[in-house]
Image (cartoon, rainbow, N blue to C red):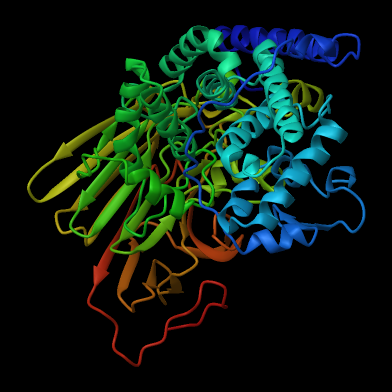
Length: 586
């Protein structure tokens, strides 16, 4: 039975208590007798619109005009019926539809037809769900819809008649007031911050909401101070949160300036700290490392956000508050997770990947974590969060974190938080002329098995050699208790573009990169297995790949040394083995 600390129990109890209250308030707010409260007694006026930094695709405008709505890997075709009357094929599809993020595609086409189409769809939503809807008025969807309506208002309202303008503004104002009154129902962490950002947008853009600007700015400052860490990471430890937040915070900063208002210093400071972290998490091919809920990297949006980075210097190497380390040497880059799980209330997407790492060489990623896909995330999440889905050590086929799996609690907490995991994670760097060394350890297996996992990685100055050592010992440095299970699996998940072939002695693997450069993995202590794996974060969806696995027992082999070494390019006639092909003997 996993031991959970008193602090964790108290935090979980407080979280459940808050969720119960919010759930009751949510049911109360849905009462038809109370909905009138959220209407506006006066006509508001739109005075400015924020910039939308997200990428748009004009070719999708014709599909939407034809009644074909393709979101989250699902397609719904509506003939004579309104799209808002159709049954959503998935929750992800419904979120995309009801957030109105697709308005940017219509704006990209920017014609009289697409403007009329946008107004017709907005009008349909106001008629069918403008009063209230159990999904469409969820705080997270409501926040995104408010931002999208504000951002696309110049496009939607161009050539519009006075009647539609009034309906649009009245509905938008009503949504803002509802979100303001139900803000506490939003989930802690990123959803709460995004709701506050939406309210601040509205206070700056809608004349009738200007009286709430002071309160909105104060909430924004409080949330930024609580969620943006001193090194610029997000408290959830999800690298992707930085991209989403900066895509909203950068236009918000511009809005303050456009209204001749000084942006809050906390907003400016948060942006300045977050920007370097974008480069910290990025490999040379432009993709982010797959840690703690990160999925496919929105490369276009990332490039747009990075264009606002005035410094554009080399990334920092140490992010102690976020719990990550980066080693850069020659043409290689290594990123390692050296942090504890985030607070319980913000851990619904956190992974059990402590001491996992990713390795890239020039424009190619060699070692990765499995990550998460762009669609069907909730189906894959239970698997992707496990330690076995990361390039680190799993002890006795268990994860280094424990997740709250009870179905009733999972529904109440809007997810599956981490309720136990590493309490102490250490990381020490030693940078010398010939190499940079990282020594890290965690106690995620201490409670169940009395084991401390220590990992040492050493990257040569030219980046061509990565030596590693994984060791297992009790908290006092002695051998493990005889009665404790001691089987471990050291995993290195390969990127799907890497071809792998095991050496005949069973202690090494040849890795062939797409440009035909060769790396060799070797270990002296144990045999190496090549097993199936899946890379979930592919741009085109999950892809088959393989993983290098070393099995052993901590009592008989308490320390395992391994290495990755770059060798000269393969001859022009050589042929490697694809990751999804059967193994061939050498």
